[in-house]
Length: 404
Image 1 (tube, one colour):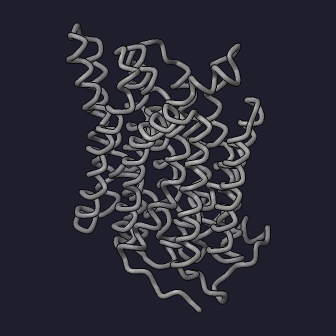
Image 2 (cartoon, helix red, strand yellow; image 1 turned 45 degrees about the horizontal axis):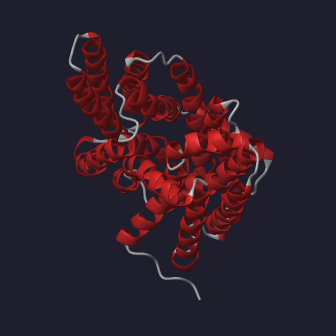
């Protein structure tokens, strides 16, 4: 019997849970890294950081293929298959006895997580368009500001109570719930007559079409820069709390507070995007963040008392996550809007390229950490300036292709 269509509230909740798989999988691990290093790689503790990057690599590579598969086979079967692989990889990571086995499991886990990420985006595009899609995405993308902050706190509680391996059990439980919810409640959103065979020639044609569409390519570049900002913050914020401010023990709690504050950005975006449009709102957010990051850089060089600088840093950290809530959803919607006829392929390219490019841009900034705030504040300022310029250039493309 075919499931009845979901209400808009239940649909947003389900899609948000699918999107949250990635944030939960990355950020819940952060507090447990010292425990894992002590058990699996005590002689080379820095290698434990690959637990984060290996997941992103697996996800980024697989993202390219998941969309075309969903265009050919349908959304549900691909998404549920990815969820099954994610669960199996989480079980493998739970039993891993070496760092190498754990890293391999994390790559597989990232491959599985690419299903919920890409296919959920394609489902939204199947059912909605234009500013209505952007409004829905703004609520869904709230997980990118809420979950990354709450996940470290949950990971710390789980690791303290039952050890770091129990975090992978929580991943399994999370995926089982979301998979069953999808299987029982969400109908297939891509009719058989609208499916595209997964042929190499069609994939190349879709790639060429996206590359030649100026708004799509510019939105993709801006999104990669936005992800670079996010990855830089995630990779450096815990060392900064520890080495700059001596607040490692309270890190998960401050991070949770910042995330709760920043989550309101998606609500604000849902209100403003219908009035101002996606491009204008994202451009303003990037421009404001350039000013805030440059100001934070100058303040970090001033002879301020430690508690004052710490408070300023928390406020700036909240602004970075807040700005993410005003940009990523809109940039996704801008890039996806002209690509409705190849939504799965478009979601794959956008997700894969923006994730991998963002991670690659973030790596040298993260490696430049020298025990001060400068690498983070200057890095965020630089990538936001690049995104701001990209959005300005996009205005000309919109004048030719139509405003969003």
